[in-house]
Length: 345
View 1 (cartoon, helix red, strand yellow):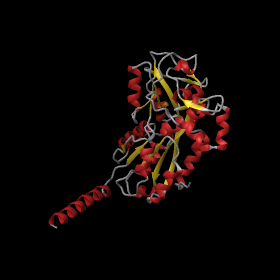
View 2 (cartoon, one colour):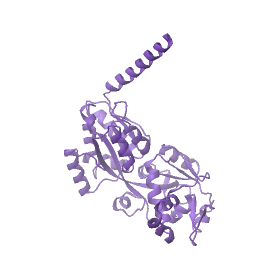
View 3 (spheres, helix red, strand yellow):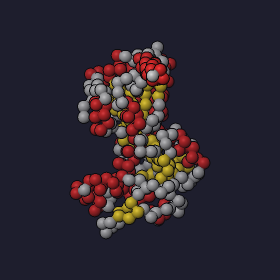
View 4 (cartoon, helix red, strand yellow):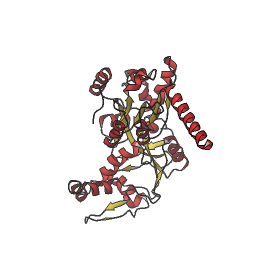
């Protein structure tokens, strides 16, 4: 009996202490996308230097991992902001609502391209979306309307114009927004070049998605976690490996690595901004509006991130590789910041 009482008292003490620490938190906590991470970190550093508030804590958990933390509840042990390299999914939004996270501000930061890069010591790749799909899909379509397990082991087998090197690609895990966007834009983009597969989207969407979105699991595609800097390092060490990550990491490592040409377009700032580069996506962050009245500096942090000085056309984040929003979208964002309109899905 004494043991039981002591156990209950200890449990209550630990829980009370955790809640107390959460309630006393006076530092902004940000989780989420590894792609948005360098931008958020730069803003956080400037925020800590230029305001009276502490530098926000930024964690790279991946878009999916960030959404999971963010939507877990309103307790201050959870994050105030989550970064995302894709828009929040309906099921994530529903989880937020069910857990009491109801007043959410959605902020579009800018744009980013997803690159397939390799070492500058190797030959630069130039490939189509179909090439990308055929290299990385678990199963591939045949011209007679069937599918077979992916038989390709070298790039030359995929396309005679590509190098005769082994297909090895380092990329993000399923929790990553970069992976979600890559699968949707690059993999599906190549998959639907098969006419019968494209037609299947209308008749059997589930089978279509399974075929076009499933990456092979035979060691060709290597999950490298949420650490894009580690991927860059491995590309430098091994010249035959390719890596998948956001344009910002290519932009800041141009002396070591090079981006592949996709559909005849280089992954450049201008090509991504104009939409010529086919594998590009918008970047976001989401904020718990209720926490703006609790966590000191949260509103000011959001305002700094969305200022022209930071994320505008001449902002300091463009030096980090961020592709800024166009004039119309920036004007729309500015108006939304004034009204702090709730996200509704």
